[in-house]
Image (cartoon, rainbow, N blue to C red; front, side, top):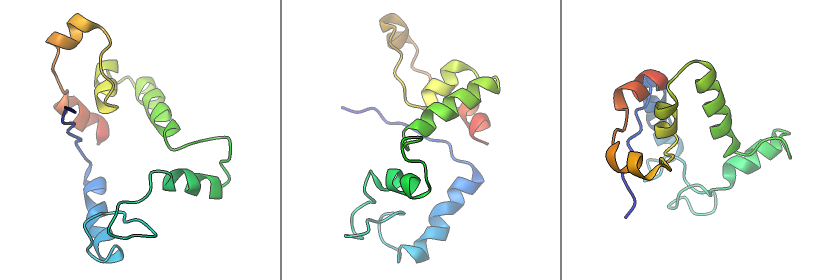
Length: 112
């Protein structure tokens, strides 16, 4: 079973669904699919947008996670908090078994 991942969102991020409601015609998905608006946007849509912006062979959507990790580490945020935000699972077995923290308060500060 997959574990639940809570994402603390900034005020700006929380405003996006409200802005998108009339654009998506109040459908179930904030970003509906192009061909079938009752389905979510295709997982490759962000990559196609990056290509159209000229980032061919330079950047893919998943690469933004690497950029975020680098910037947050440079800003001095705790590595454990960054890894929790990126939903990376601790690879040290004993630590993973005992440390169940989601670092919510620290992640709220980091995402602000």
